[in-house]
Length: 80
Image (cartoon, rainbow, N blue to C red):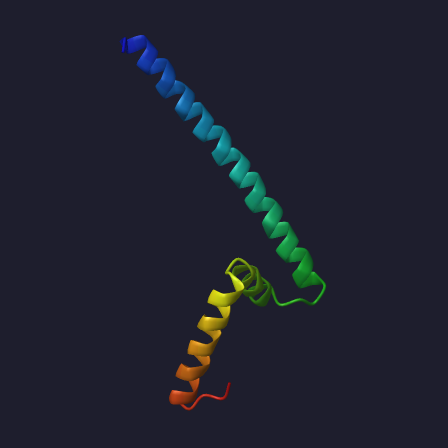
């Protein structure tokens, strides 16, 4: 591959990555706004984030994890 072709490809990758980084910054700002709005309405943001993570896990896997957490909590004398 000629050097100028490789340099052009490299530049394209870098520019594409830079655009995606900027988009991600914008999305992160939007997400912060959503959480700030939820907080201002009296919602607990850490709990919202937990719900989002839990919803990303398949139901069966989530049920298995919850059962295991409950078992551990009982073994450690924690109220569950």
